[in-house]
Picture 1: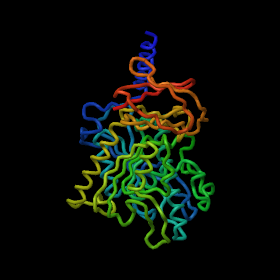
Picture 2: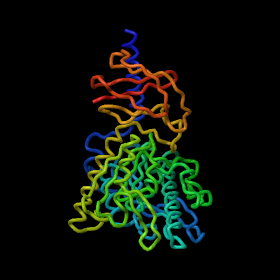
Picture 3: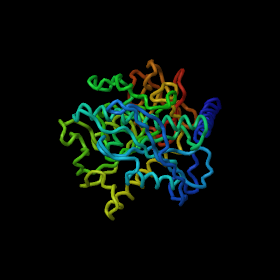
Picture 4: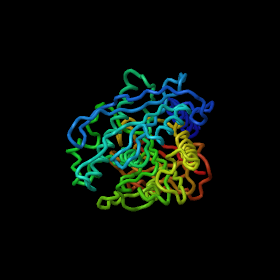
Length: 408
């Protein structure tokens, strides 16, 4: 009876916490069907300012789209960044505008941002610095909406459900925002401190720039190792024939000395290895940003892009949304388990920023019976299913919040 009561307590506590945190209602077609035919559009909304490559102050603006007539009090947000190789492009580009409008019709609030572009001298070093400046501007946009959510609530954003999204160079920015989260990861020659650190000085200081997930459309990262256990999930779409941003490991910078990057196909094995969910849609044989344009072929690619990303985002809206600070130990459980649900094993990982301490753990079945007891010896180790039946289990240890484990 005591074991059964313990199980019921854990289950009720977990459900109560989930209900308290899960604020996004996905019923009645929201976030899946275009139930809002009309949009409210706010153009050239100022979200910050920063010094550009010439040392002049540049005002940063964005276009915001929201479903007209929507009465929901707190809504998820997608912040999109355009492409252009950190040289050109604007928030009015066709592909990001189309995506913003499509998702707004589902019920999201969306924003297409401008950011600092151009760089001199025109070389590999400075395009890397340009990508950092652009990422800082995207962080400022996220902070703008968190500040609004905490004050005037003009846009009625749920601060736990903000997603970074981008196309091409914009996808570089979104990926860096989520996974380039330690100054020590930035190559020393980029002099990150001189650029204003990872957060930058583009505006809205004092608010978090963390996101709940990432939409990576034809983007890449400088290092796959930046993706670590406990990071937020991301979705990728990329063409195998992309000659601008490689699908796998390759170089970028036409006319510049080559710079090695890792495209969507190369990021997936790393993310899989560390337990970060990352569905990838491969456009077989397609070139760069095949969804951009108005031809029948472009629009077919756009339809696929829209639906695949939609189906990645919607389940996340039904999960607790408590991200308020990048990699903050205050928002992470001391132990994390990935993937969930699992088939053969789960990876048990100590949260980054939490001092690891070896201890004995117990796995309980749905009746509260201890079915396995083992020693957690390393910050990262596997918990194998073995002969356990499919179902719900709880993993507990002294001084730790019990965690649910689901074996399929």
